[in-house]
Amino acid sequence: MITTIKNQEIYYEKHGEGQPLLLLHGWGVDSSSFASIIPWLAQHFAVYSLDFCGFGKSPAPKDVWGVSDYADMVEDFIIQQGIENPIILGHSFGGRVTLYLASRGIGKKLLLVDADGVRPKRSWKYYVRVYSYKAAKHIMSLPVLRNYKERALGYWRKNTASSDYNNTDGVMRAIFVKVVNEDLCFLMPKITAPALLIYGENDMDTPIYQAQIMESKIKGSGLVVVPNAGHYSFLDNPRYFRLVVESFLQEDMK
Image (tube, rainbow, N blue to C red):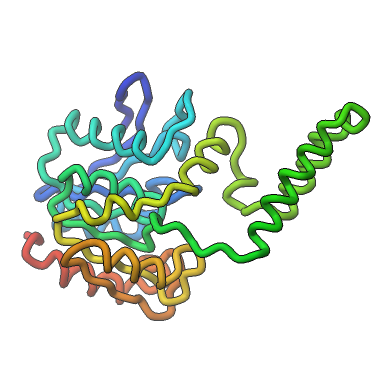
């Protein structure tokens, strides 16, 4: 289904009946990433899944959004659909949005799955890449080299930048650069809803140390490490993931 919020088209789906549960997907994918868990969740909840603007079937924003803008969009969606006090499951980038919503008092319970939001530790190699790119950009702006600038910088990005960066362009690339550098630790002490952090033990995108920082800052939260799982813990070890979620949401399941 398509709805419109502040002149932005939003694609969403609703499955099941009962207590509302909102699914917020990660960067570079869309709501279909939850296809394997929706049928199970829909047996117990009214499950809402939406495509963030710029992903799946939702067109990209016209402006460069930050995480708070995506949270505004989701909050408006919740109000528009008459969703009351939803449980929120946020994966990866969706976890960033969940943190913003929860800091505003939105969400009955939170499932932060391989959630982003803690600024990663940077190695010296990272800073070498960043500053070498800035130096190359400056050098290639010289009149004698200007005609080769885009080709040279494009080659550099292709070989050194992250896959998430290279797989975007235009406004979505600018949004990625903006959101990936946001440290959301300042939001975490404001969260009062019960929160469970679920992370794959082999997650290289949001490593366990980030989950531990998040757990220390969200009062009363708990952390479960999923064995034999990476950044998509709900896909890598679905049986374990399901048992953990069922335990956390036992009182909410009809």
